[in-house]
Amino acid sequence: MNTLQKWLGPVLFCTCLGGGLTLGWSATTDLNKKRSSEVAVLQNALYDQECGSCHFAYQPGWLPARSWDKIMTGLKDHFGENATLAAEPQRQLTDWLRVHAADHAQGGKIQKMVRSIPAQATPIRITEIPYFQKEHRKLPLRTWKENPQVRSLSHCATCHPQAKEGSFDEHAVRIPNFGPWKD
Amino acid sequence: MKSLFILIGWCCLWVVPVWAGPTQTILEGYRAAGAGDFSAARGQALYHKSFPGENPHEQRQCITCHHKDPKQPGQHPKTGKRIPPLAPSADPARLQDPAHVEKWFERNCTWTVGRSCTPQEKGDFLTFLLAL
Image (cartoon, rainbow over all chains, first blue to last red; front, side, top):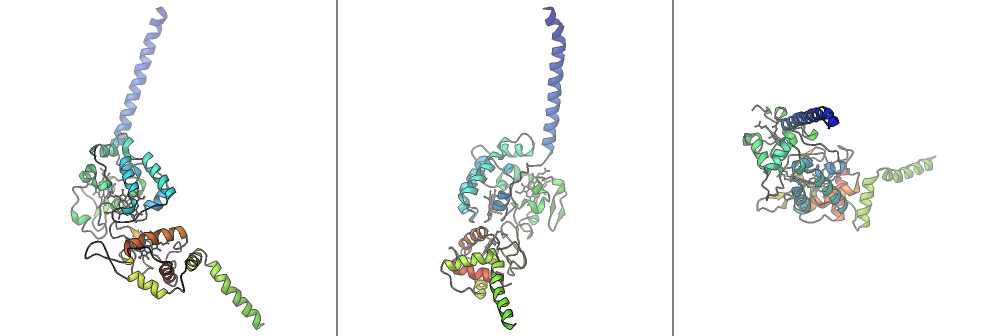
């Protein structure tokens, strides 16, 4: 009883301090993630080669696993083009995309984006996702659709110069023929 | 003396194709698959030829994506992505990897022409690019 009383104070103190520190730490990291408009950049030469020759090599973090599955099983008619792969790269890339898909994002814009997708929907375009459309709704058509140097919102890197590095900050946007974006 | 030069010249004739490397190997593959002599003019004609697309007024050509001058970079019509020039004289990385060449012939011929290209057509086309 005596020893318990003697230890209870310090133990409680330490527990509270530890807990408080942990809470404070996770709150700041969450805050950082919420502010950032970044997506994880993963090096994969096979992916760049196979999925980066017709368009920007979209990071796996932009779509949930079910979307990548649907894309990878439909490569024969991929938006009107034939993007079929040999069996081995097909398997490797499907596994890799699944593992790094958006589903498990913790905080930040990516989690917001995943939440904006209705549970029963399996979008095969990033540009179809409600969150993406909301972020780009202020862009007049003349800045992209009618802009011969852009044409499609799918070409992320034409306006986001650091897209390849995973950074899509709106302050860094430069639209060809229009220059920096002022909100 | 004269015969020595002839001998050296004769050797060079053989050495050059061997040095030319992977692209020549690809062409030999087409010959082994039954193609005859290759013609750069026929290759050029294929490059510019129009084929009917899926929609009534859509026309598809190799130069829908590649530049009409193969020494210039092209642009993908839908995504806007730059496609480096096809001519090896403008981009030395071109036509070096047989698997890459075959994969893209298969994709681009089915999309543009509506079927796979024959070994003859592929050989003509590469011969056209090599002559630039």
